[in-house]
Length: 327
Image (cartoon, rainbow, N blue to C red; front, side, top):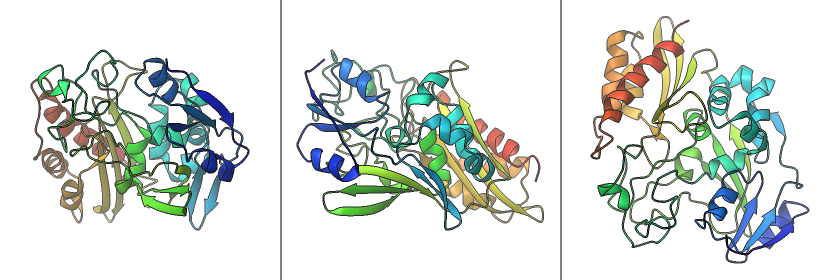
């Protein structure tokens, strides 16, 4: 583990000022960052502790809800506003990690989770474009069972590991960030990046920017939503495939829909064609299967992960059926 310095910020303004030097990282819960530092994957030179700067409120705001970036995952999952208005987010958070980790992990940190690719996590492996740009991607010809089937590139086939991010994408969240040049809002769809030729950048955050909040708009999906996570074991495992399914149903027909997959791409993967195919139709076995097929029609599996195509199709059907069960 590389030596580093540490400083506690008194407020957000001070934290941002301290983070303008190269090699600086913010630390909240530290559940991902510290693991990566111990493995010499993340080489932070200076840590800015932001645990005492506030930013942990969950408040009603203009018909929606604003979640502070330092709110703990367990607190968000159990919050009455979230459980009532955004049960999809509560389900997704409760399916991630362990209770102990959820008690430490923050919303902002969850947004910034790095991939769990075998080769990225092994500092002895020299071929990883995320760690060493230009070195190659060992996973393409190596063990790639857990890797991407959508949106990948020759530079990287890793996946985003977060459950929360998938639900936020289905709920059209906006990420509020502050930096040296002021505040800006980033739609969740634009926050995470596909790998392209620069997989070392997981997000569109600029250096020294601090996530301050997540804004959720008013949602029509509270009554008909489900987060389904398919994994190798029942707890504390990352998704092979996950699905956030949300429906607005009226008069027996689907008025609006959201289908977002996790475990299949470098970012939460919204299946827009599948959503469009459902709108205006009754939620039937045929329409759900069509949605599942459309979601993976452009899939490009690797040697060991072709099973994810069928798994994703069936997971979408199941998630939609559960979401629409009371429609």
